Image (cartoon, rainbow, N blue to C red):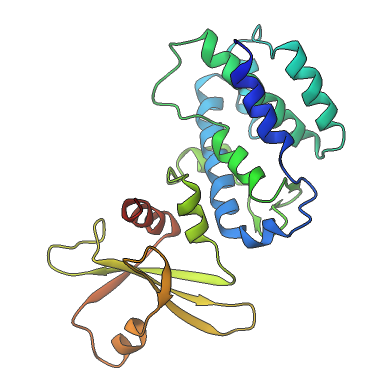
Length: 251
């Protein structure tokens, strides 16, 4: 029984298409970037709390909290079989850390409550298109993001909306700019709705609104606003703010 949570994580890793034969990394490029940034933020918080700054960002956090914590032997053996074909080495380290993490939680009930689960965003990122390559930038196979330093990641805005339906709603082809529709009684934190302007890979512009049907649908709002039909105003928002709105709208 004690090894079941670790086995559940190992099974998740074993089910991932690490070769990404169906191009999931490109389809989920936006959500994967957000998930990686959130992992970097959480890992930085744990590194700072346990004096592991030199090991950040891709490290076995449980080993720094309690070096005596071990993955159940049978689970560890199966995991090592999987990891033989994976690269880079830092990816293998995070997989071992994610599998060891549940054992740490079982052994230590008093871990700091303000520190979030460090590995869940990274596991979700892996499940949405495989791993990464580490160079001057973090190459997620569909997008590249800067690694930054630990302090900049500690202070980064949290991305806590990890539901698959929310992540799916953030993924689409092209570059996106998000806006919140605001008015009296509906300030930016609780807008009337959100819209986005999406420029696809061929340079075509698509204006879309997240509707009561809980999906993105075409809208004329931004074009009409530019023509002077501006009864309802709007303000630019981040992907994270858009995700918060979407999460609140979903059942």
